[in-house]
Length: 245
Ligand code: BT5
Image (tube, rainbow, N blue to C red; front, side, top):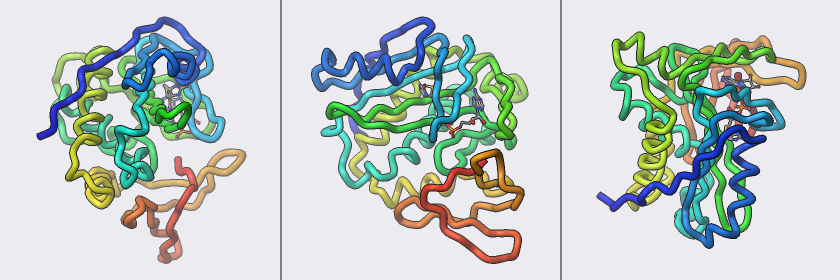
């Protein structure tokens, strides 16, 4: 088992986005891993220019990892690694089996969205932005999947509430556990992600104005982590860069 990396987490209050705060800290970090944990965000972002609603009470975390510490083989599946690390982190604090990942970048519980992630790269670092609802499920106004929180899930499982700091430290630990594990090949990451998907979810393609009505179901991932879905006419299609609600 590889030795972990001690957490180096900078706590900040209300910020625009932890991605921008982290970017401004890259030069001073001198190639060491670090993370930014904010209380709230006024301009939290999702993928493709979407908004990440970020009230106080939830986890807003950007993990900055030097590119040299990640094997090239697993860089293409970093969004999948992120989902797996977040799921493992939640399950290391709240024991229960019904937390899942949803391709390509979401964490879900009981069919509702708990969190999501984005991966960017700058200045020799990979910046992994993670938002997980811990205490507050903000209203989702753009036809997105209904939101939920870790603490609601903990309560339904009869377990104590968790804190954002506990979760941030657990995400750090699980992330480094995966990327430092030399047996975690791209194939293994893809297989682990597929095993952690909730295949019963009804998925919908995003369109510029909302969601495509056609119901899709996840079938399998290929070796690059691309998702094959089952369409309503019984045929299959492999998605590369499409986003699903
Ligand atoms: C994501 O995008 O799920 C990635 C979210 C990443 C947020 C983190 S927070 C720390 C770091 N700093 C940032 O500025 N961002 C990262 P995507 O898959 O595109 O999902 C966005 C969609 O999720 C929105 O269009 C809404 O439908 C929905 N949504 C927005 N806020 C939500 C929330 N708090 N909980 C659940 N769903 C939400």
